[in-house]
Length: 266
Image 1 (cartoon, helix red, strand yellow):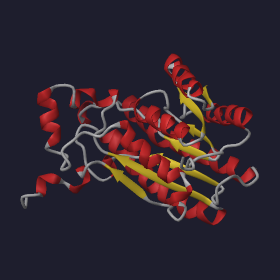
Image 2 (cartoon, helix red, strand yellow):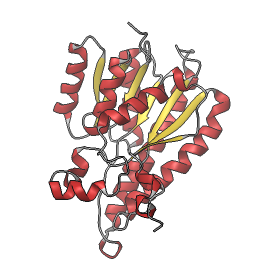
Image 3 (spheres, rainbow, N blue to C red):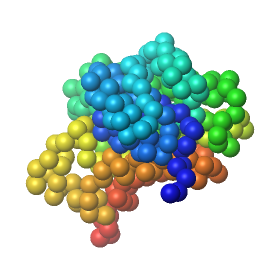
Image 4 (cartoon, one colour):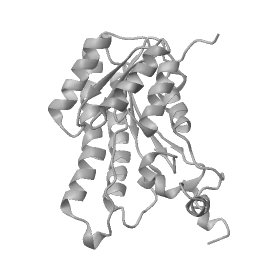
């Protein structure tokens, strides 16, 4: 049996109770990590995920926190440290959409998406850096690893979703700036930019044959992504296999960010 890539590590995955986050929690646990599954509004799903991991022989807890709330983020880290003794990996995955054309978008929609998708990642990354630097060295050469969840829409404009694209564009430069700042301290910061992934948040884009056919026009590789596609990338970025990688965005999108509409010369 091969050595598990995250053996001895403890991880927090925000938004871990469903979709991409749930896929990452399962993959981390399979690779030997102890996992804190963050949730905000789905306690039953988070507890079920933790139970699933424990039933398979792993260690997991469910932890409630609004990632846009500073004190709740600190409490989430406290609970994880109490349960596992340390924190080695933080995946800032939690995010929302609240879509509308510009002329009808409410300020509350803008603020909610920026708070969850950008401010939430900042608060989690800041707390991660504080904890990594305060604890003894762990099982990895890096003192800690942060993985930000971005999107192909950090580079692809998306009319009717200006709050979402602004948040993901912000994640891109935040991640790179944090990576530059924290690398001398032994902390690696990277991002994953998913394309179209089969999750509840975008069900309308793939749930009917007509919608799926239209979606395939945007994906050169010819299939929709699965949460496991993102999870495998997250495992690699969290593991020592990627120890010389920091400040990078890994696009996991089947080629969507290649602008397939221009394949025939526009």
